[in-house]
Image (cartoon, rainbow over all chains, first blue to last red; front, side):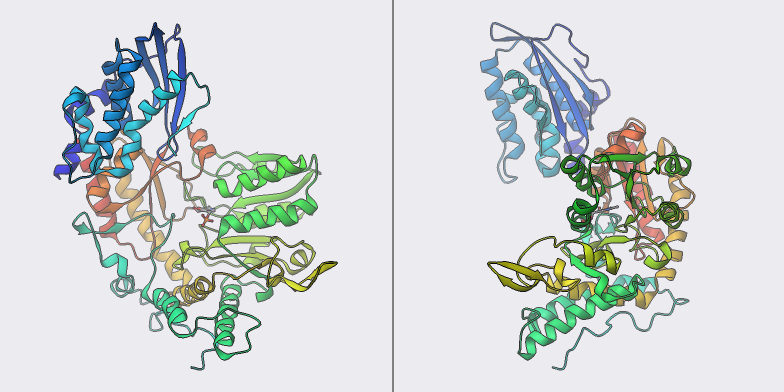
Length: 150
Length: 422
Ligand SMILES: Cc1ncc(COP(=O)(O)O)c(C=O)c1O
């Protein structure tokens, strides 16, 4: 089945098996909890922000292959970026996942994150891919209420 | 038309010894369809069951031939609709061996039935410091209404723990019963584990101390012959949609004297006897609890679903499903890296499982691609997931229209899952 291979790309499986930046951060400047009640995914995101720059970012928690890989690749994509760069990246990522199937998604500016374009063929899994990003938004606002995708 | 009630429209010709699975499957239009280009193997029956043509036709017949509001209508159409609606109530009473159809209250489903009991009987009988006993394997719908009641009244919830195999710890239950216990509210069959609880013994132990009990029959009534008098409970609740009937209809059974004493649940039309601004008086039971226009088509459909299942025979269904469960359990146990959650000796046909290093959500997506529909998640049992220290399970839940081939397809699809994550 070709579409399953679109979803479970090798890069995604690699990040699922060996998530990057998956650890607690003791000197975080902010953190947030995210929860996807549909599949029980739970994530905690840590940020170290200095002068508007994401100096360090990490996560802990348990989740499905898609949310784990998304969290892992998000941390790689954002480390060293400014907060003003992070926001449009999330918007482009979200737009790619929710773009209609008869539209070629705009993946150019997304770099490695483009591997998630197959998720849009599986609408119930979009929330898995966006959970880490929603949690990021909460962490940036330094909200301590857990975010939920439902 | 001389309709007085929907006549039994089930498989009249099926005798218990002649369980014709091919004929049964052909009664369900949805089982003839495909999913992702493959024949559908529907294994999410604990969430909701498929509907036989007889039920679909009965609801269509109501809307086509005798759609009218019930009760109070002086014209024939309304009388026909009333007869069919009240006829369904009689069928439910017989199906669960209730002493009287007056003890059957139509509700939206098991959830509304529990909320009804909590909001009426509960508010009258449960006070600050009183205790309600539940179990660790309850569906959220038999937890949260009691939490709401406890918040309002200052009552306390006590929880019967379960063993690793998924059985209630009966010793612990005995020790929880106290002079402050006002209710034991327990599921008959666990939707997430399949465990069949020894409800008769549990109810008897409560009754010995004068404590009433509520049994959540949402998962037992589709699979076992139910006799509320034999169980001995005071309240029994279930949903129609898990029983081959439409969504949005279900029933509460309660002992007549309890229903008489309980205050109304919602106010409105139909539940009153007289209304004036000085005050109103209530209709007799069960109508006192049925405010407003009910789900008439749903109730009629539920009556026909009961005819259909009775035509096959609940004992026959239980026997067939048990054979399927044994086959499925053996097959799943052979899959390396797979662990079944819920291994009680007395089980309904539910297999919850987890796999090493593969999240249930990914299992669900991949087997779906093979045309196999299973559920993944916490199954509205978060406390139970916490008990096993897992975020979720994948769950195959079987019905009498499933086959060994469906199980084989699931097993083959699980091999696919392993390939993807190899
Ligand atoms: C054991 C149990 N109780 C109660 C319910 C609630 O049923 P409903 O959502 O139809 O009200 C369910 C449904 O999943 C269930 O499995």
